[in-house]
Image (cartoon, rainbow, N blue to C red; front, side):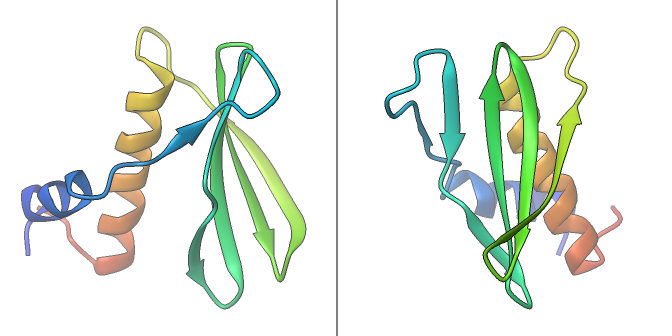
Amino acid sequence: MTREDVRQQLAKNPLEWSEGNNPGKAVTTPFYISWGTTLQYEIEGGNLYIRGSVLSEKAFCVGLFHRGQDPKDKAEAHRLDLVCRMLGVTE
């Protein structure tokens, strides 16, 4: 499997964003990684964050630098990198 194969598979199931009751804030549905760990992308004030939890307890929140790039595009690119690393895809 190549990186392009992974990209095509992920394109079939893009991240779903919702604003809920908070204007200016968009979040994705949390997605399961492994061993009770879930990740969720969040855009607030134009900044992109990843929120992680382990067994439903908030474990971390990391800001992603996305200068000149749409935060939603950056989230998709990060997800692609993450999945490729998990699968051991290097090309």
